[in-house]
Length: 398
Image 1 (cartoon, rainbow, N blue to C red):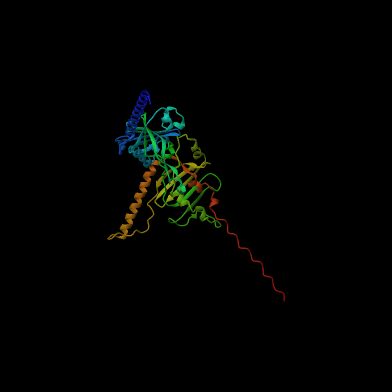
Image 2: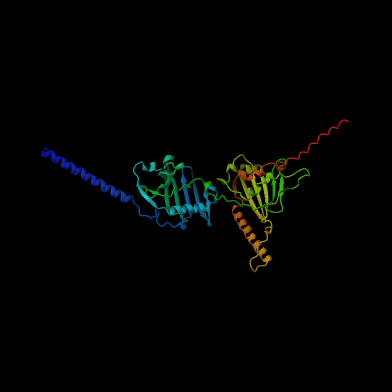
């Protein structure tokens, strides 16, 4: 081999080796930049007790939950009470976020990771969900965009041991760090931007009813059922001699009355869905054994949820509870008085809860109200058929 050729090979080898070392060094630096110390909070020491407003904005809508007089409400639903447990859980999740990896964002990366800000006019497929936390003065405490979920392939994730992908995290973008995304292990699976998902769906729930009266426009639309004790058989008030209540028609009425729940609340006072409430309302008066009267008015309609409103008043003391076992050294009458006091306290707590919803209009799932829509005749058992007259026995001929 000629000397000039050999020298050329040595120079080329040196260049290749130097390039490899440079690339290795760059990889190590990049890896070190991507590594995050365990326990590092993405938002630092965020004071969760200072959070007085949570704003969510996405491609499908927006939600603004805010604290008003120590009560969380939903602004887009006429300040209807919010689901505090759900709001507080979201705030805690945001405060506890710990990134496991940083991702430098180049051109097109934000779109690929669905991290475009909702207010930027990007296509829905590239737009994430904005989460903003503010204090009582309106100062922003945190602002981030939740983007694409991150999945990990697991050999046993699918059915019958088949391999599959499992969601293990989500990419986030901080409003003040638009050049870097963060991968966290929190998936935010319940991060929805529909106000209906964030309202308090607990409604004023009567205790076991002792009397239910229904009044509505139309023939045979008024009826009353009553009973003497919780769990006792219902009786149809004013039943004629040949009328009998069909017990199967009121079999589930206790569960429906005591389980009343809210599906949604109006967008505004002029919400078109409220129209049936003013046209032909059905009024249901429920007297419970806890000494309360619930006046539930709802509008008939064709939807899955019907507009309704409720009012509550105290009618007397709760019905005496079954005799409670007296504690050691306690007289039976003292035990009974203690039980009555506890029942009154529970009743008063329900009245206080009802006061927050007094005059509020809501939408209740139709299945809770279905028993009160039908006519009185629907409650009646079919008339008993008379037994057939046996045919006369033919006489034998002599």
